[in-house]
Image 1 (cartoon, one colour):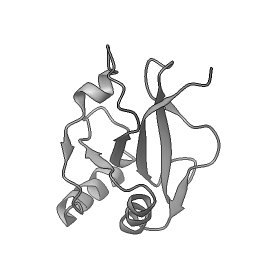
Image 2 (cartoon, rainbow, N blue to C red; image 1 turned 30 degrees about the vertical axis):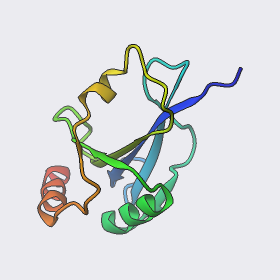
Image 3 (cartoon, helix red, strand yellow; image 1 turned 180 degrees about the horizontal axis):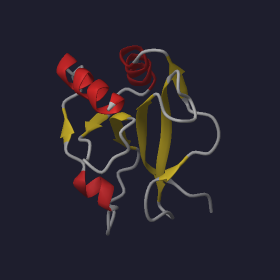
Image 4 (cartoon, rainbow, N blue to C red; image 1 turned 45 degrees about the vertical axis):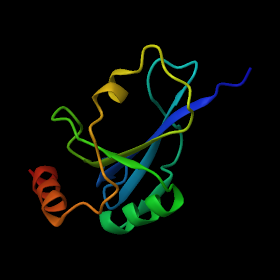
Length: 123
């Protein structure tokens, strides 16, 4: 039986080590057979020069995404995390990441958020 997709998460990285000139998006998935989110192997699912443009394309391709709060333990190259449930199946023991996600409305992040990330990423 093929695993059923329960949720997917899209992580936006600014200038990661493997793509130092770009903003990239990596897709992580949670299925009914996995215990936690697993990153898709291979190339990033999106790549661009500016965070704002990459975010716009991601949200156009995946309507209904909710923004997750960043954790202080996250990689400093992570600018934003967006996720979406893909199944109405109730998880008996949801992964820690799903339990901790504090979502915000689907609004454009303010410039202060982007500015703060730039300072954090360049330190």
